[in-house]
Length: 229
Picture 1 (cartoon, rainbow, N blue to C red):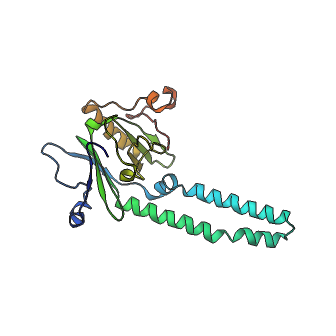
Picture 2: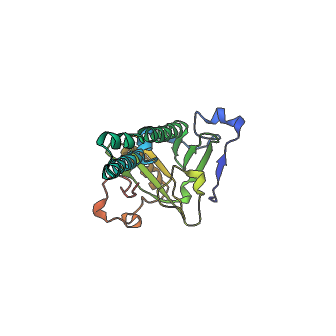
Picture 3: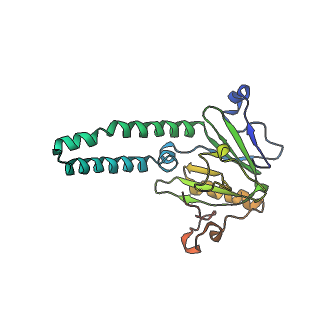
């Protein structure tokens, strides 16, 4: 867990907190700059990988068809055997879509003049509190649908538990999890807000070299287009 901690929201406080995404009044002088939630379809595609699941089942059905035909089955029989997987595939995708919609509905990202807050959780909401002093930098990856992801690189002395921030984390960062504002609409505009807030707090945008990219692979937005999903 981060030294800054994450806040468990008691059940009797949830009704008040759920509409704002902020568990308690902000200190005097601190202001909310932006609030938003993930776009559920983008979250389902990139966070819960429904396209990859669909492709997996399509390949599996094709393999069943070819395998059955090679064993001497008729085309109709082989096709019927392959299509038996359709209900399973639809059920799996439907479950992931339901989970993605639930997370998108219950998640609130907040950027203030001093911190980033991630309120998330379907059954047990928690709020992850990330003061700017814990953030070494931030990145941006834009998607074709206009949404984008903004991972936050924490200082080496601060660390979060994976279960505290999933699915709002940069993929494949398990030893040093990086929280991420995921599938945000108008991501370029939100990135400018975050960049200005971090710059005002003397926190740099993530350098492309730190993300393993060359400068040619970044864009001209306020945050570097750095982190892959």
